[in-house]
Image (tube, rainbow, N blue to C red; front, top):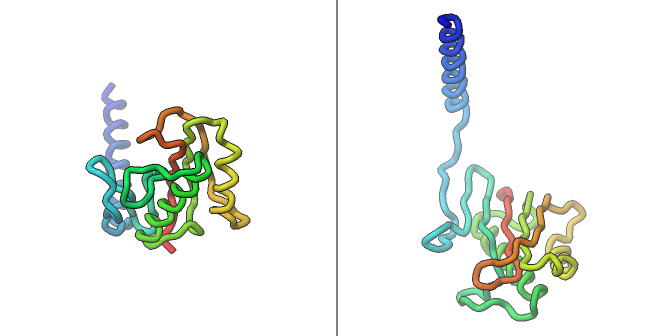
Length: 151
């Protein structure tokens, strides 16, 4: 039993030493919110050169009104809103690494993709997850978040 405790203490000591060594090498830039979102979340956070953008829905800027035109109109607006947040954080849609796309109905997948492919028109697309969970905030038909790097 004493040998087990000694081994456990040795492993814990090595783990602590490794953590201290990593913290001395890792010098992150100060984390900050680029754009306030709401009382519940930030529209984006940056850590070093990474940009994490919260889910964007198809709200017309400065309003609580969803864009007209069904899934295509709301997708276009959500992606434009995403672009604005990326730009405010020193990034752009060309620097998006991954998106998560939520559709009110997975039946809208093809129509969503028509607009999405116009937005991400480069040969190398971001990694992506797309699914239809059902209800989205404010009755939106689509929500898109992104992880990007600064330009």
